[in-house]
Image (cartoon, rainbow, N blue to C red; front, side, top):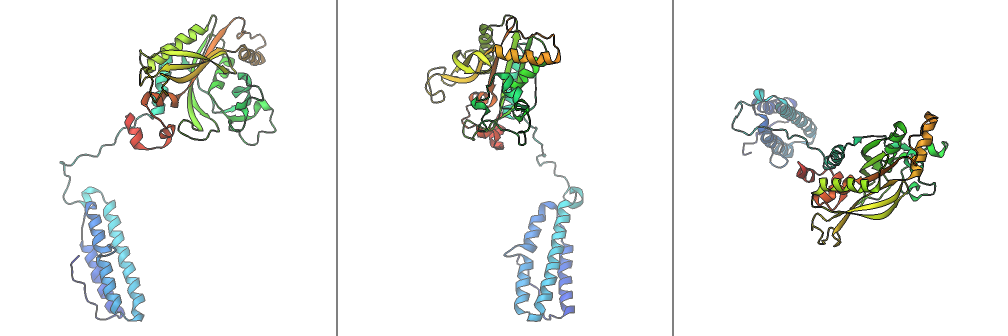
Length: 369
């Protein structure tokens, strides 16, 4: 940076060409590795003390008015030459640009392996618990018809969940019959209906997947979230089977010391229905801020499959086979349950804001590696 600025005595075309040719030779004479590219750039193109700026200021101050335009043109050409030299050095392979060779004492570049997203990890853990109990996985589309999402699940036409403030409807469906209108599924329960229509009992399935609701995002709600639902249908299935299954699942997910309790609730597709709570895993039921000092945390809903659902399934099966009578509620029974994956993950890891799962913040996600 302390190099002497060359003097320019004349501003005619030959003198300008000779002066800039000398500067161009200086640029070509400098050899540098990609590691030294930034020093080269600052030496020539630095905004305050770059050699090109200092020379430009010195020559332009004493230049006559008619010589300033040809000077500017030549300075721009020289700047382009410097930028080309920089780009060539950065793009060159190490063997061609670095005379020092390979320094084997430097740490190697290691590509960190990917990890499952915490929601995917939690979902797989839940599914694995029910696989161990003999359940199989069933999947279905996220774009569903009103029949599978509501009608077959005993949601009457005026049920609040059908409101556009809760359900995301697809545009251009007004001309279709109401049962065929498409929407984004609000739960994974339609897969239960599809599975029962497709096969006769006994049936034991677990249904993981993404669901959509027109919810405002806050610390505990998201318009896109994930559920894991389950269905068990056979002869002689009772509420005791449901309680035993979910008690085992909660102990497998949160530890053998956790306790469960069931409270009466309401879901259109189950009767009787219940909400399931577990003893707080943070305070062991003593009461703390995370369980709102109750000692219990509500996690999921469940119930015995409503006979009306079986009747809807049987009606659809008879359209395919008039002799079908597999889901006669007088002969079979079953239970269903559903839980939010985000809810389970937040309790497992003590997370207070659901939005962290979707923020893409690597500092948060790397904690689960």
